[in-house]
Image (cartoon, rainbow, N blue to C red; front, side, top):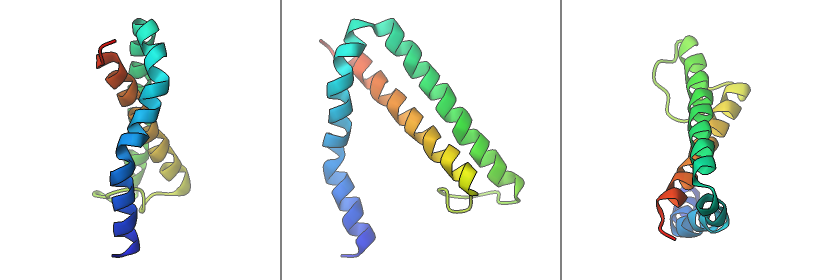
Length: 102
C-alpha cells in the first residue's frame, strides 16, 4: 500500500470523528439560536464560495482552463482556495446541526 492510499484510508476511517467532533461542540449553540446559526452558515457559504471562485478565476486568467486541486495555483490563490473550502465545510456542518432533532 502506498503512502497516498494509506492516508486516504486513514481519513476515510476517521471521517465520523472529524465530522462528529464539530457537531458535538456546535450542536448546543445551533439549537439555542437557530436564526443566528443560519445567518452564520449563509455567510460561511457566501464567503467560502467567493474565495474559491476568486482563486479559480485567477487560475483561468493564466490560461489554465481546467485544473483539479490547487497544484497549478500561486501561493495566495492556493491559500484562498483552501480557506474557501474550509469555510464552506464549516457552513455545511452548521447546516447539518440545524437539521438534527433535539
